[in-house]
Length: 225
Image (tube, rainbow, N blue to C red; front, side):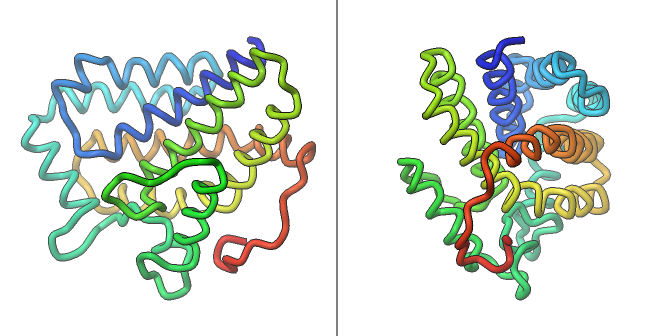
């Protein structure tokens, strides 16, 4: 697998995982073969545990009605009275467990530094948006690799490592535990396994990248350091 192919596949993994954390559309998920495509990507990487979890998601999705998916999604990630598994990073990274903390502002700053403006009606550190940001950075790296722009490849790989290490890898494990503890929906339980195992599997790549691209210092967010 070439550098471009490896990076593009990684980009697609982040993208499809992000889709899973928006309000579910069962018919669309089945039509677009969301779970099957995830499983195939993980198989390419030989991420056996992630692949197995994606296959469990496929089985569960077929068994649940659209209405059940919507209700269980809202119960976990929206409320109305409490979020059983808050999808916002600051809840896990901030000592006060609050929304829109210093870590949220730092995430937003990283988006802006990458040339992105946030148009979604969500806080910047929502799990889907953080996964989409990683997708964006990986996709841009793949394009840079295709054009042999080594300086840009180096820069984008460093940005990925910084964001992954300071944010996603720091709070996803606790988030996934909250999902598993808070749901009887096999789709979301398997999604938690899928996300957690993928983050664990891909961490070795970012650890290697970090050796090549040392972490930037000076983060103002103590919770994310």
